[in-house]
Image (cartoon, rainbow, N blue to C red; front, side):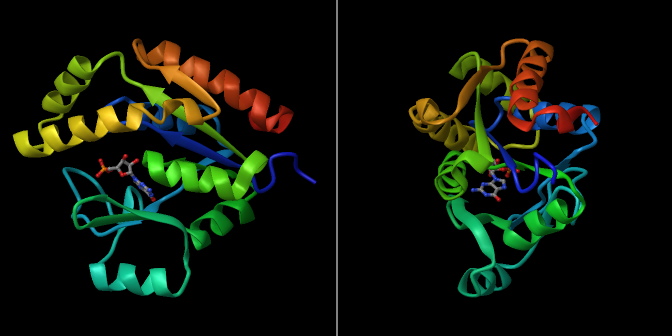
Length: 195
Ligand code: 5GP
């Protein structure tokens, strides 16, 4: 039986801390990892694609899935906007013999960690500073000034939970943060990881 069977990797961070870049690095370098595509009620941004970045669904459909107990976890991450990890998504990835990578918010990460315990590893990606975070969000050019402010306020709140995760990765230099993350995951997943 595979050592990495039914394990889960949770990456969490304030928005703009570099979690998505680190996730992309991991997925490119380690074919045994697979991105867990969340469901969300927000509209696609930029080049995002349905079924790849998220499953974009209506509020009505999302609430129906909550009632049917289809989510491992879900959160209203922003006012009126739901995001959630579908149990079926994890089953799909496990059935391929792969390990899901969850890119989710801090509260969702705490819930998954509480439910899965040692089957999961949770990594908090720490931005170098709030100022750098602000700069990164501004450079994305996909956010309005209001949405940047909302994300910064939330970031300060989320950093307060960083000690509750298995490891904190400071993302000052992306490449270093990626390598550090990969090393931690190799220990968690064992030799299967590099196959
Ligand atoms: P964005 O709108 O920038 O794609 O994502 C906003 C936040 O929602 C990010 O912190 C992202 O990690 C989080 N998020 C994405 N999917 C999920 C999910 O399934 N559950 C939870 N709790 N948060 C999620």
